[in-house]
Image 1 (spheres, helix red, strand yellow):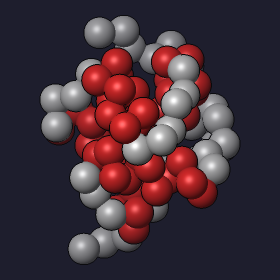
Image 2 (cartoon, one colour):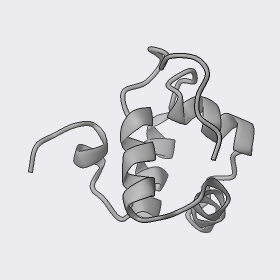
Image 3 (tube, helix red, strand yellow):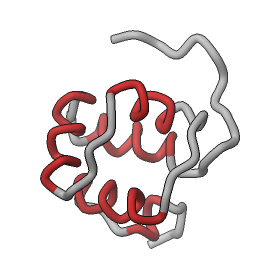
Image 4 (cartoon, one colour):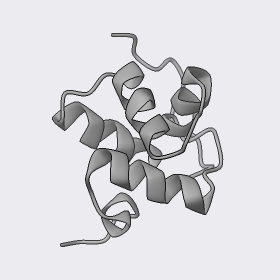
Length: 82
């Protein structure tokens, strides 16, 4: 597994949560990308990496698909407490 060489960006607030949830679920990026496609979101590995590194803006419809693919609520992705 490659580690990030640069610190997180400031383009979104969900990137680090996506990584954390994905790792808890033991899901590799390529598996996650395939699952995203089942929810109608087709993004490249580079785009996902930039999203997770918070170097890419995230559209509202992407947040919904990501939450569904990770089986969490949109609120959880956005940092709301349970």
